[in-house]
Amino acid sequence: MGAVSVVLAADVAAPSAARQFVRRNVPRGELHAQVPTAQLLVSELVTNAVRYGKGDTVRVVVDVGPRRLVVSVTDRNPLPPQLVGAANEQGGRGMLLVDALASGWGTAESDGGKTVWFALDAP
Image 1: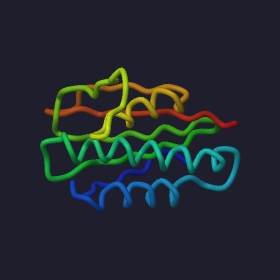
Image 2: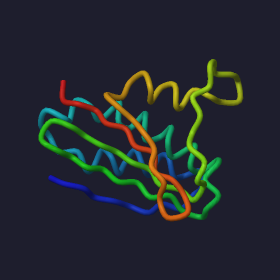
Image 3: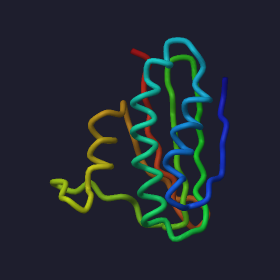
Image 4: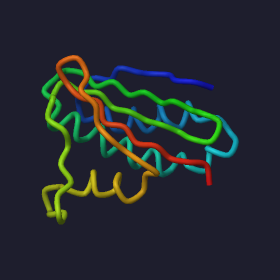
């Protein structure tokens, strides 16, 4: 299928819109079983981008390959996300979930900001 992207306003509606975008853009097939996990993880990344991203928008990319789904979120804050040792009542769970559930994840510098991505393999 290839990659598709959307630019979302960096506001409280962005995580929900990102979840819907993922659901609409992963076709039926082997990778479709990963949609719930992808929705959870993109919601966490977009929430971080809205909270810490230093911009008015966030960009979400869904790239569907033959046996791997890669989702990335780009914001305007160049600082990479932090894996904290333990979650607390104010947060810290998002990147721990990404680390635990994704087949892989990482960050890259992106034109004055950063892109955080995760991959999910077909079961």
